[in-house]
Length: 194
Image (cartoon, rainbow, N blue to C red):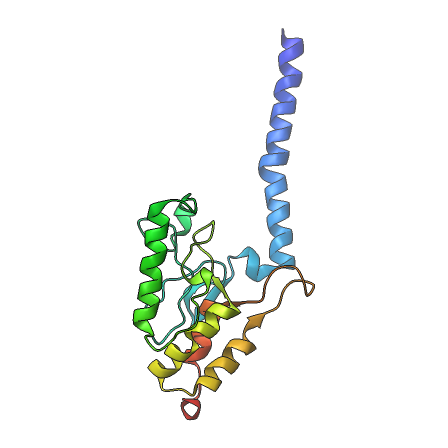
């Protein structure tokens, strides 16, 4: 019996050390050397204080800021520990009601905007934590943000274009903009640009 137990226990201990300790430390160390910011969570700081992550959306509600995608996490929006979608299909009346309510809220916040509402402003992503919006969603909100801040609309549009992230290799994905980075850039505009 010990002829079977000793090799099995040795292999168990060796694989536990290799896969449970050595491998994670090597991968983490390599990640921190090669991509230090991403490996640490892509934390965004302002005046030495962490204010968010480039990887997790935040709930901006002031008309002075760009709004991100709706969050499907509950009960707290953009809660990284509760990542996941609502699992509501396109024929679900609850989803249709939620989209209608979001469209109504966007129209109420910017009554003069007759442009079609981009889909990513009224539907949550699969994770419920999406930090980016499409360029169409950013441009849709540009007028409201410009009026709320007293900035020329062309200045806000230029800021969107400056922060646009193009698709990987020029064709994989859609152009997008990170909402937190865009809102931080708004806050850093020089007074004469307002």
